[in-house]
Length: 106
Image (cartoon, rainbow, N blue to C red; front, side, top):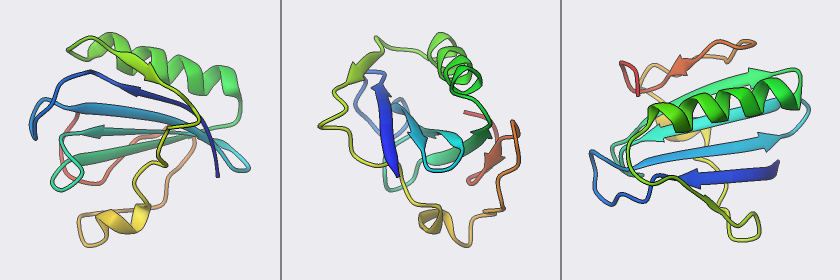
């Protein structure tokens, strides 16, 4: 997996923190986490093109609170693995459809 971008809303804390990753394997994937790494909800979308994926990233950043900042790609940690949400309603990701692995919307 190649991490192409990572953003953080600059807010610490279990409830207010937001993270967004843009990755590429075969298809483009956007992963958004609302909350911390222990209890946060994880949403995933897959796209055929980089433009579609970046449009979703822009939408997520516009809708979030805090002062969003892009993290350097060299220091960008990989997004949470799908297995992290096992037992919490994880399902296969379909094109341009969000899979909420923790319940509700971000």
